[in-house]
Image (cartoon, rainbow, N blue to C red; front, side):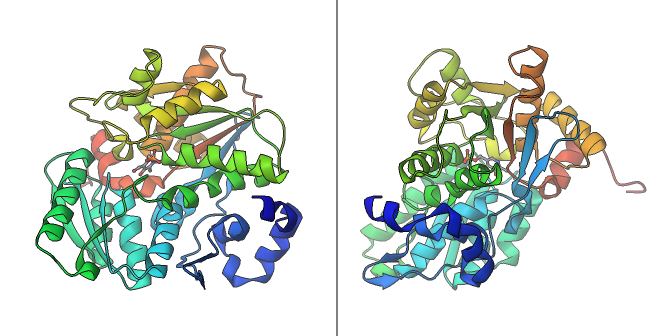
Length: 373
Ligand SMILES: Cc1ncc(COP(=O)(O)O)c(C=O)c1O
């Protein structure tokens, strides 16, 4: 950071990004991303992830939607996996494995294909069909699991252990690219924090609303704020951080409301907001600490209110939210109704994925069938 303070200037970012194809998307923040390792410069594996639009709500003067559905593979997962695969390629890894709620699998499948690395993806068998299709289309090794992401994580761990015990050649042993078990996905996701501040003219909003499963985006943004303050790129009061969950899988809300420092396994997790079906986030204690320090909170919405919010935003704003994004808009409505937030408070709310990735799940929630089918 000391060296960066002398060289990394926020004034240079826009011009650099406009001038160089190597600064596509989130790589406009190359100054604060890995640039070299093991004595060699890093070449990004990029599909132009990041630098997503910030849409101003038509109804609430203070509300901005950060549209992460505009990313390659249709979700913010592209940021973390774009960076993690870049580094995996740099270090010569040949097999990457991931347990996923669905969208991380889709993103790994795409970036691994772009990098020429094998991807082994494990996800619940009832993920949105798009996630399964992505795995197949990009040529990954796909395992559909009768269980949750926690079961997928266990299976990946067991497989790698067995490979090591069988003295599998090192370059054939899978590398577990699970969130927070390697250092780079959080680095990719931190670019959401840089972006929202830059897009607001290098100022903080009053609050950030983030649909939380594993919570890596929230952790990454908080890291970004810390770095930007150290670099002198932003000052003032940090935003209140809100973690939004589905009532059918709400380990963070439960722990937050009970003032516990960590969560407990949320039994029988069930919600059509598939990305939020993480019954025991690995970094729960970090998420809860950030909520507390920022003065924010955790809130859950039922699947019924999530669906109602999807329909409301589609009809009134022309935005097709993912169920995860709609967990955040549903919580926003709740806080406005309770008077805890004013429509003029400056809020950046993450629509973490494109509604179009969930046509099967959302149609099912609406009991909608194709006419004539
Ligand atoms: C669309 C979407 N939103 C939010 C999340 C939760 O992300 P995080 O693990 O960073 O909390 C996921 C995770 O799968 C997701 O796919």
